[in-house]
Length: 254
Ligand SMILES: Nc1ncnc2c1ncn2[C@@H]1O[C@H](COP(=O)(O)OP(=O)(O)OP(=O)(O)O)[C@@H](O)[C@H]1O
Ligand SMILES: [Mg+2]
Image (cartoon, rainbow, N blue to C red):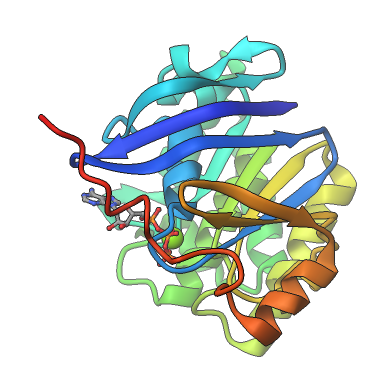
C-alpha cells in the first residue's frame, strides 16, 4: 500500500531523513520508535505532504501512485490521514463546518445534514466526548487528551485508509488510552486500512496489536522486528542503535 524508498529530507538546512525505507501493506499496523528529535514526526509530515520539508531524493509510492507529486488535499482525498503529535487550534472554524465541507468535497455532493449529525453524535459517544464538541472550534481550548480524541472524531468522519498516528497516546489518562485504543481497533475491524503509529511506549503497541516495530536512528530505520523489539527498547533504551541525532545535526552547505 505504501512504499518509501531511499527518502532523504531536509528542513532548515538540516538533513533529518537520510536513505529512509519502509513498506506497509493493506491491513498492517506498523510502529516507529526512536529517540527524541530523530525524525519520526518528520516522516509522518512528509507522507502527509507538509511543504516545509524538502525531499531531496527518494520516492513514496501509495497504491501504485507517486505521492510526492500530489498536494496535501489530493493526498487526503486518496485516504491519507495524519493525527499530529501536537494538533493545532483553528479558532472560529467548528468541527462540524470543516468536516461537512471536507466530506462534501470528497463525495462530490453536499452530505445530508441528518446523516452527518447522526454519525457525529454516535462518534462522540464512542469517544466519550460531549455532543458540544460537534460545534466547538477545531481543537480550540481543548485539553491535550481531548485534542487527540477530537482528531479521532475527524478520522471516523473522513474514513481514511492510511492512518498516521503520531504519539496518539501522549497526554491521555489511563481510561482515555483504553477508550482510544478500543476505538482505533473498532475502526480497523470496520474499515480496510493500514496504520503507521509513532510512540515511545510498548504498552500502546500491544493494545493496537502492532505487527512490525521499526527503530529509527541516523535518519533511517536501522532495525525492524516484532513487539519484542519494543520491549527491548523499554528495558535497554536506544544506545545500542544510535548516537542520537547524529544525522539531524548535519548541516547542509548553502
Ligand atoms: N521547522 C523546523 N525548523 C528547524 N528544525 C526542525 C523543524 N522541524 C523539525 N526540525 C528538527 O528536525 C529534527 C527531527 O524532528 P522530529 O519532530 O521529526 O523528531 P521526533 O523524532 O518526532 O521527536 P519526538 O520524539 O521528540 O517527537 C529535530 O532535530 C527538529 O528540531
Ligand atoms: Mg515527534
